[in-house]
Image (cartoon, rainbow, N blue to C red; front, top):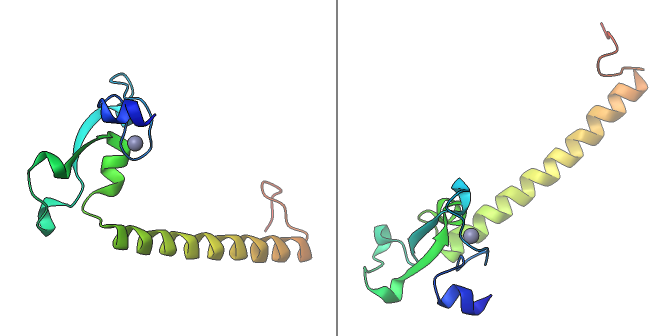
Length: 102
Ligand SMILES: [Zn+2]
């Protein structure tokens, strides 16, 4: 995989091979340090990334990506807790989805 990345045949972030027939797997150029925060245009700051990874990374830094991951994780926990609450209320009230509940 590392060799394919070095050769520019695979995404530097996820390692998937590029595929021009799949929109998310198109080959794009990404600035490792975003231009918006001072990343340069030299080859040192450029990697090839699939469109999906490039779009997710956007103008993020490692720090802001970790913050995003923490937010998503917290959101996932809230969703799980909420699902349990909704399920419990439905069960105690004998409700079913599509069951014509009033
Ligand atoms: Zn990728």
